Image: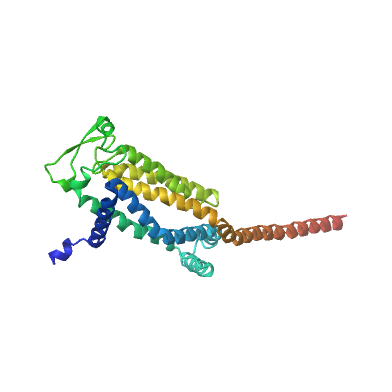
Length: 289
């Protein structure tokens, strides 16, 4: 029983990624470039799912005006609102949970990459890439000491603004990732109205701040992998926005047409009442005369 309680369900993925990283390193002879190549490989694997996610988000955003209309119509009847919402999803073929699938699948990969890095602490503690581990990094301002648990409790390594190895945090690399995440959220799916733009701005600010706070203790190797993956994701988003712009406009067209029709009907319904009121007033004036 203790074996199952202590078992890591992601260990098979960790072992596989560790094998892939070591295989790539035997070719590149650099763990940094090996992680960059790993990010490229993972992005290629997830490309179809991310495309599916983009289409799902676009369809969901196009339905927002109709969703708001339902919420206003059934604001006092939650059960009816839920029924009408599900009917709308069924009618348009939209799955509200489809956009979450790629994220749910990518998180275990990210955790497994971290596990593969910490499983090879001694290697990454001596690994360098770019400015990481160079004389410039050693000369950067010192921030204190850091104790990577994978090296054991007694071990304490000095930390700098620029990492002296891929095992230690690199705050310049983290800043690059935070900036990339901001633009990644902005490019995730263009907003159709002011409310969606406002929500997108909030997410674009909150998400990078959270990552900056919790990521200050992450190995620069993990940040390098994640930054590469995020840059590739932004490239994919830009490609999808250009390729599927007609599809996005077509999905939004029926919603906008329906909204315009409702507005026209409301105006048309108000006009006869105004004209009728004018005629009745003229009749009353004539009878008085």
